[in-house]
Length: 262
Image (cartoon, rainbow, N blue to C red; front, side, top):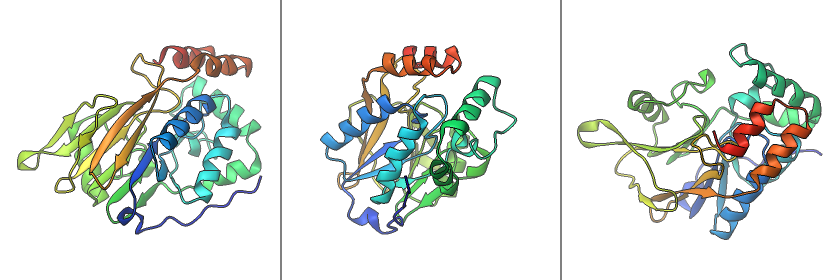
């Protein structure tokens, strides 16, 4: 399959209604398909994939093929650390993760590898910044796990809205009174007003491997007209996804995490 990627529309934010924000798919086709169906039925006009298309799951090729089709239609796609690991596996990854990276490298097509290698680390538009880890240093794969880390990301983004993944959790940071960075824990399905008079950082969660004891896939929808974001949880056949991981001979611990959402 030959992939083509349409240039990102730098002025797209002016005409966008609803952006579906999906991150950390991790080769989980069942979870991705469920989220894409949910987003389409919810009226998504645009899609952004925030990295880690592969890693952990048993369907890296199908996931890359799917995302590449969306990219060819104008979707934003950025690179994650597990995507980069297909080019070269870093030393910090543990044995299980390295085993999956090696297996993924063997089963992924040459075109798929080129697609992952060609992805940018960060995409900036007038109102939006899309990045896997932190806009402060995308190549370092730092985790945003504190208000201070969130502030560094927000400052580096230079946009009203920054959308990230990487931490496999759903959280919202914003500039509060006095310029301090505050944290908000969203309730799935409840829209949150995020006016552009402040700067916001949304961690959209993981499609393919949530880690909050809930196996349901996670993604988010941003409504630019109403200036609000809604975090979503989408049930899917996580048992089938875990079964595929075992059948592929991948580490059993990964299948367990998909089954339990841990």
